[in-house]
Image 1 (cartoon, rainbow, N blue to C red):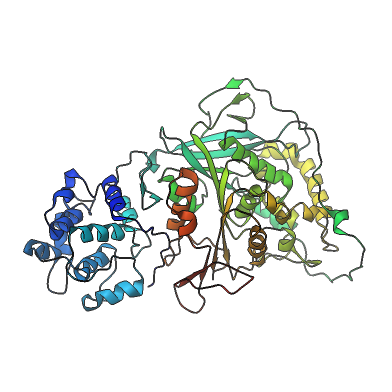
Image 2: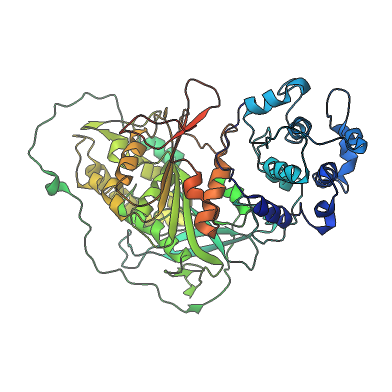
Length: 580
């Protein structure tokens, strides 16, 4: 096993003491500050490192110092603390298994092989050494992929007081996820995709901690979120067993097909009857993003919206369109305090996101990450960063290739209209479906013409869905993740975005893994969740943790060594450089 940690912040000793005191490992009640020697300090730290029992000393006999002696006997003997002794205990606290991950005669070799960032100092330790080593241990990963401090939190170390707490630059799990507030709002957009003359409303579902502290938001724009029409999708899949047609040359220039947004007057706004402070609708759990769930316990709100043309929202579904992007942008604007939302679609009662600190990150993989990227290209205020995984930057490069009609890996016959059919979840409410059926069929007929499976040519329809055109508008810092073996959303999508971002003064971070179309936050060999914790604590809470310089610009998974991640500073123009 090899663990790669890039989110451990080098911290001065005096700051370590302050942070240890903040989380309860260096204060009066536990007597650590008054312990007379290194062994006594270590005993006090260990005593409170088992939150599942009242007094951790009952666990000391379960921990070995070597093959002959347990921790209780060693501490009682007053023997000195050394690196070898401390790390032998640390390996067990971190969940590593004797004779599988380490042996007592080769503790140092195991620590090096597993690549644990534990404290190193030869000879006999003093009290300050023990405190520094304990600090390092708390931010070291366990065998199961959590920081040790997070493992302690999962076992009840922190009181759930719903107040933000940070350690080594990262948010701790101090919020009670059993008492989260779940509420629904309907955000007013600036688009009218169903042509009824009134601005479309889009449903947004909010999950937030019950706290008096204003919190930031992780927003995921997911057209899949309100349900799927699998049967209708399958029925619309295009036949790919057809002959290729001979291409007819033309003299079109880009200027002739370039997408130019039409300058139209805004549709009519919804009437406002008043403003309230509480919503009237809740919701039950559905398919949520794991990375978002990780942050709910750390003082972040999470919001999901499926956008226009989905269940409980207005409008027509149009894959990747400027209108779809605008509807997702509107949710960011509401979270930032710049847009109206209603508590339902009929009463006219508005509500503000008074719980929000106005700072938003967008997260998600595939279509979800695609819309995060697209919203970033609008330059919307309040969007501080995007964490996009396996995202599309140009829809033409997804369903077309140099004038040929193609399909993403595993989905032959899919196209823009087929994907729209899948997520037009207004079908799932019978009355709404019957009200919109004829209009939807007409809308889909037009889409089939615009996307042009006959020639496969790049045209105005595709140019409107090429987000690379709008990269210069990006104000948010961007984190990108992509699989080098992804045949669904191919790596060229992130490569072209990465190239275009080099011209901008925003911070950009890139992770390239050897997997396919996956999330990587559960990859045990890389501390991705810790890195995103460091990043979002900085971007959304303003913690000065040097995240922008601490996290490598480019991190990639080696394909010739197991569980090995390299870091560098460039991709594409010169060979990636190893950091030593």
